[in-house]
Image (cartoon, rainbow, N blue to C red; front, top):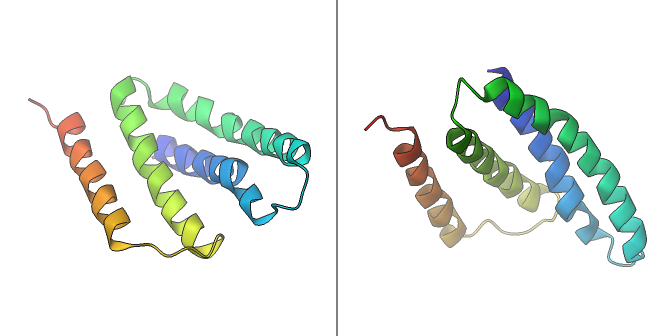
Length: 109
């Protein structure tokens, strides 16, 4: 699906915009803010079309839910590979509970 692919790409950019600077704590804050804004602009170039294309196929609540699941998935990989942080069992349990929310959002009642 185009929407999911665009959301995935946008979340990769946004994760780097929000958290990529954590490896560069010696860099002045104003510099990382400017770089983050530039990266975030790229995120918007994918996020806005994803929402535009996806709305109608998905409700706004469903789009947001998909975006959050993708965001957490991208962040989990990013935190392990880029930040070299441990993915703990309680994080995984929390992510699974969020996946349970997907069931309720997408279930036709």
